[in-house]
Amino acid sequence: MPAVQNVLVVGAGAAGSAAAIALARAGVRVDLIDTAASVNALGSGITLQGNALRELRALGVWEACRDQGYAFEGLGLRAPDPAGTLIAEIPELRTGGDDPPATMGMYRPALAQILIDRAAEVGARVRFGTRYNAFLQDDDGVHVDFADGSTGRYDLLVGADGINSQTRRGLGIDVEPRGIGLGIWRCFGPRPESVTRTDLIYGGPSYIAGYCPTSEDTLYAYIVEDYQDRSGLSPQQGLEVMRSLAEAYHGPWDEIRDNLTDASRVHYTRFSTHVVPAPWHRGRVVLIGDAAHTCPPTIAQGAAQAFEDAAVLADVIVRRDTLDEDAWAEFTDRRFARAKAVVDASMQLAQWQLDHERGDVPGLMRGISQMLATPA
Ligand SMILES: Cc1cc2nc3c(=O)[nH]c(=O)nc-3n(C[C@H](O)[C@H](O)[C@H](O)COP(=O)(O)OP(=O)(O)OC[C@H]3O[C@@H](n4cnc5c(N)ncnc54)[C@H](O)[C@@H]3O)c2cc1C
Image (cartoon, rainbow, N blue to C red; front, side):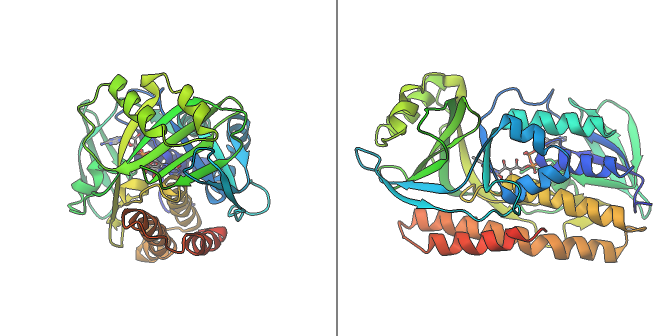
């Protein structure tokens, strides 16, 4: 019998929906709540590397994701010159094993919908538009007051409520994410035929310009710059800024820029980081995903690490009879150093950009990929 019988998962993003699926499938009663009114209908793309795809397969959603995503192998490097000259093609390690591809691009809301549908299918009770006001725990469980006046009693509360986690603050953990000085413009649009994998352009007036196909018809593209407070810009002004930054980049970028016409598909986000020191639990409340650690997306691992947190937490709970300190020690041993190594590597890549330093990018990426190729 699993170590817990009923769980409240707070946050239905990558971490929370994956945890809900893995626990509910094993017979645990799961309430999955999210403050958002519904699965977000708008959004950009996401790059899922092999280790993320391995977890999606374990959750039973690989085929559904593959059907909606765009799989590819390897990474291209282009120059910031008038032709967008291809200067290198770098093979990527299949970190998910022989079966899933090295990488897959996907539309974020499509991934979110697949995960939520799966959580409901395996028996999790999913409630959007729901928040809690407070929790109070004792040795045996957690009492939760919901904002609608209802209450619940759970064996475990999983805080998967993202970078600004209410649960983290509720535990009195005062580690907060900090900006690292970079910001990213992202847009979502039609895929030019020439875009069949991720290509990155380092340099030019911005730090990085890149793109990733997300389906036969779509892609997302991004430009990384020094962080600026862009909050005062209207959507149309944001579109114009991204278009003007994209003027410096060519090759497939010429078509991407021409297609960049829908202001509602352009977003600006600050790069942030934090790592909650181990352990990530206090009594019967545990943090996973961005609530516990955030990395700048320089190696596209945030969601992958969130899936791994969820998988390991569920594995520990399902294999053990009691949620004792041994169980938590196993969770901490399998997750903390690995997630921190990913954050550290992502930060190193970002720092090399900020310092205009070349750095051993291939060596760093190879080391991380080798680590990720072994399941968490
Ligand atoms: C610009 C950018 C690009 C990225 N690109 C990639 C990429 O290509 N590949 C990759 O693997 N990762 C990428 N990431 C990282 C990835 O998006 C995150 O690491 C991942 O989404 C974390 O999942 P999560 O479930 O922990 O948090 P979230 O996805 O943020 O989900 C948290 C959920 O909790 C809900 N919530 C918040 N507060 C409460 C509350 N109090 N009560 C209930 N619900 C609440 C929110 O509505 C949300 O649905 C990127 C990140 C950024 C910023």
